[in-house]
Length: 205
Image 1 (tube, rainbow, N blue to C red):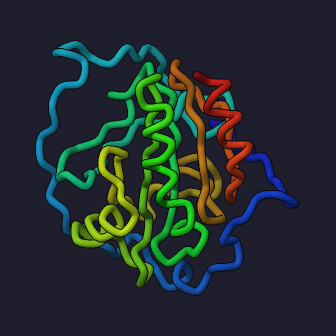
Image 2 (cartoon, one colour; image 1 turned 30 degrees about the horizontal axis):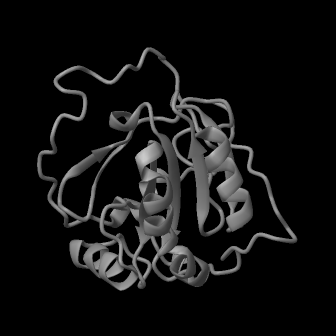
Image 3 (tube, rainbow, N blue to C red; image 1 turned 90 degrees about the vertical axis):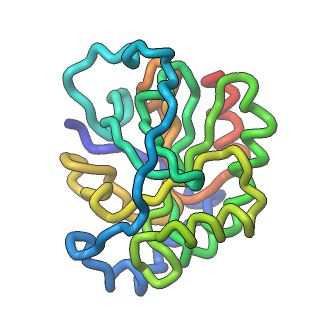
């Protein structure tokens, strides 16, 4: 699998690349998420997702690998269930200042583009103590930032692999990924640029 190639916007993007204290303290292999998944509805009416590829990866031009995580409603969110939508994956940490600043944008962009087949998916990797987020952490995040129908998922550090072979090569917070309707990674950025993200979403729609 190819490594994910991100566009670095040194002059206009903002990220928590220097916010390393909380992350360095976490050993993902020893953490257990206490959220218990609940069955979700079949989003394809009983038919499997239209997935025909055999290889996946985090690189630009790759089909991302599928994952299943629990959302704020206790349901299982599966990436491939959203085939046919334009997806923004927002990998964030609750201790990251920029991640907190852009958190309300998940609902704002959902309100703007949701009826066109867009979905903003926040994957919280760490809570404010650098631990895997709990159900109460996810609920608090949604309540604090007015997130109603934009999925917020309880992730953990098993999703990260800097080699890009077994996970996403995330080295800065937030990391934003754009996936097109054919479930292909088309853009990625460390940090935040509203102008760039808007342009990418509108171009994909």
